[in-house]
Image 1 (cartoon, rainbow, N blue to C red):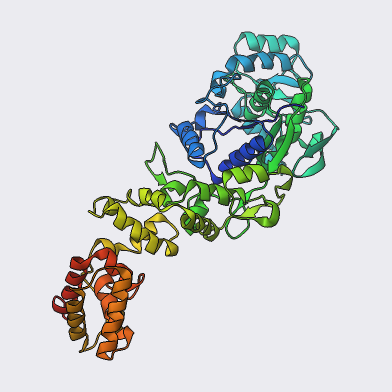
Image 2 (image 1 turned 45 degrees about the vertical axis):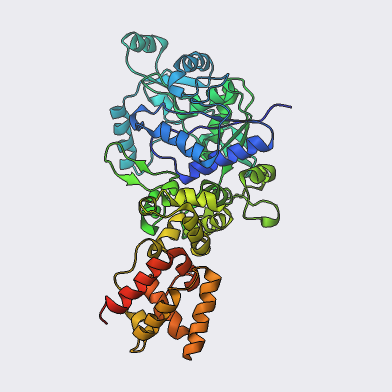
Length: 504
């Protein structure tokens, strides 16, 4: 049985979109589930759209996600090179071969000439297509004599190589996800296979590379489905056996209509790229999931379920569990709607499961935490208190800033609720009692309750102003837990500041 070999072949024309990461993930899961190889190939023949740093971005993004290629420009492999720009000699060999067949021809039409023809068609209310109906009237090796073609070649007139689409053929195609369907070749145009500069277009290069690299399955986005007929015919033209194809559904906008774009992310406040990306020309930074505080395993788990359902509809799966469960036949045909809320839900679930030591490492990357004099032991206590309410590690800090800096102002609504003329005396007397109390949460809780009972006060009359003194508003975890973490000196200073340092 032929070994499974799949490839992810992005173009370095900008940051890697969510849809691209999901394609790489499904390729990876399919390869590992079937004991095969996952190849990363960089399709950089589009020189005009090449973006500096984009290739490194792709490699770093996949590494962050835990999607590690078996072969790539970085990892090497027996089918190297893995950048199309370094495979020119290979393409030239196959260009010569296809031109010997009846499936390709050379065309000398200039861009300006084709633009003029398009305008002519538009004036007649028609759409121009370079195809079996028009090619005999255009400047190419089909319409010109051998002598005319030879003269143009000797004059070094630029040309492209086009595919000669067969006439009146019904192509019976098959896709793993979408099943069987047919295409009439009369609906397809004569695509450019090789550009003026001698480099192949995506259509020709990807077929050559997939053949050379022994790719068994091509798993890619559904935007390439209309090109499947051409690609299958290219395999036929070269007398090669085609791989199996699987075209993945789109990731849709939050409202469910149309492909998810960066504009949607900007509009609704979520990233559409795995990592931050700085545009080398404008300097603008596009937000990434890593920098927004998502865990890579939570991000990958969320992404995997945008278009695929494991058995029993489980939601929380490790990468290894996904590999065991993954079945390309269970990928959905319909597009998957993106949900910011669901992405955050996944991160919350993973945060709750993370060892506190791992969360501590991320928490200490926040400048205010890094610059504090808190011991790891104290930070771990804060994590344990605050993580249940947190979606991101940064929430632990942001929801617990009162641990790191004493309140200087107090929430007005909370003041009205918690403060009356007896409150200063209550806090003063409580403060005296706390000076001789062991600052352990359970002991503090017992002492505060005893104090309230002794004074004939409802516990709220004590706890609310005490919380206000410690936090600045009526929120946060249990007051005895806050007191233990702050420690005796800091706690008593905050009580004193509220009683004597603020006028109400």
